Amino acid sequence: MTSRTNFEITFWGVRGSVPTPAQHTRKYGGNTPCLEVRAGNNLLLIDAGTGICRFTERLTQAQNQGLSISILLSHTHWDHIQGLPFFKLAFNPANNIKIYGPKRPGFTLRSCLEAAMTPPNFPIPFDLLAGIKEVIEIAPGEGIELDGVKISTAELNHPDGSIGFRIEHNGKSLAYCLDHEHEEPDQVHPGLRELAENSDVLIFDAAYSDEDYAKFKGWGHSTWQVGHKTAQQLGVKTLVLSGFNPDLTDDELDAIAEQTKDMTGNTIVAKEGETLAL
Image (cartoon, rainbow, N blue to C red; front, side):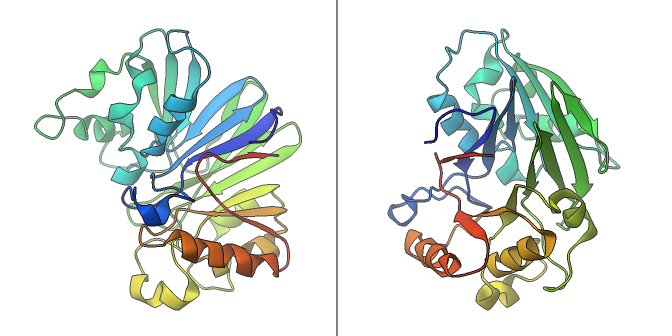
């Protein structure tokens, strides 16, 4: 862990699709997506997969204090919201939790979250999450202004849609672009370009390798090689690979980390519990 700065991120879930707690995932982690962002006085979480439970376990502040937390949801596929019913801080009415997520035609963001917690699928209804004070819809392209933090959004390429985020604070920028599939390996998606160009850190969907991608084309995810190429094209300072296919083993991720050491630029393979200062 690094020492505290005024803009840092901690990874609590780096897997896609399904949690994978197993011997072969112990090093990098098996929880689904959740990223903690500390920016000035702001505490943000991006996505609410099972990693959100690990965040709660490690939170140093007492749970009976009134915490203010903003949760940014890229989309409502199950692996990005499945931690919410088990998010202990959300049950405490002393907390002030706001959820931001994409506005979609035909249904509301709140209805999607409620459906996941509707009997007989789950015994506790969403309304009992008394710490969640607001559920706010944002259309792709709309921004959010917090205390000293600017958040931009853009549509990415994913089944049912997904939005990415660019968080700017104190002259630094973080781009979060999980659950995105490249269309052509040498062309950068306009939404991705808008969010990631010249960013200090880009968190990129590295579910697959180029060698395996043909089997998964159209599933809405990219490869670590395309991530590296994209980061170089966009002038990204640090590329973080995340959102790994649950079948990827620690040994395979070690091999990717070793390969990227000899490639241009600074590339990190995300690990649960690790903190990166911007």
